[in-house]
Image 1 (cartoon, rainbow, N blue to C red):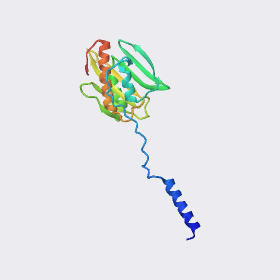
Image 2: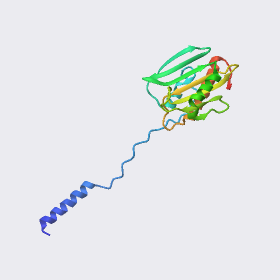
Image 3: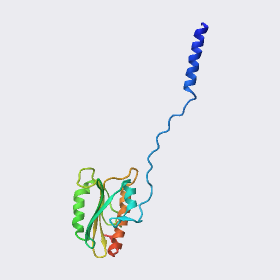
Image 4: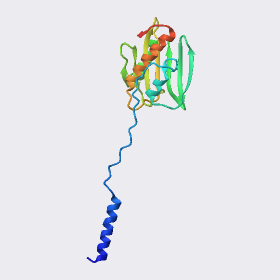
Length: 192
C-alpha cells in the first residue's frame, strides 16, 4: 500500500475514533410525573362550606384558579360550583327529598357505578359516566342522617389526578363533607 493511501486510512480511522468518543450511556428516560400521595384530610379553608380546598386540588390535580359561586337557603338546600372556563366541581345538597334523590341517582348513574358507599357512611354511589351525561364524568351521591333529617349530597367533578384512587378519595371527601354538614347544621351526622 502506498504511503499516501496508508496515511489516508490512518487519518480516517483517527477521525472515526475521535468522533465516536467513549461509549455513551443511553439517555435517561424523562422523569415520571409525581403522584400527589397526600391523604384527603379535613383542613380549611373550605369551598362550598364542606369541602377542603386542598382536597379538591389533590383529587383533581387542578392547580388553576377556581371561582366559587353558591346559592340556596342555608337551613334547607344549596349548591356550589367551582369554575374556570367551565364547571370543574359542583356540589348540591338538600335536607329534603333524600329517598327520591337517591332513587334518581341510582337510575341515572347506577349502571356506571364504580362503587357503593361503605355502610357506615350512608347510602349512595360513586360513578364514572364518561362524557355522556349532563354532569362532569365523576359523580358521587350520598344519603345520610343528621339528627332527625335525611339530607343528601351530590358531587360531580371534571377530572381525577392520574395515579389517585378515585373511589378512596371520594369516600374520604364524603366523610369530611358529612361531618362538616353536621357541624354547620348542629346535628349528629350518621349513616342513613
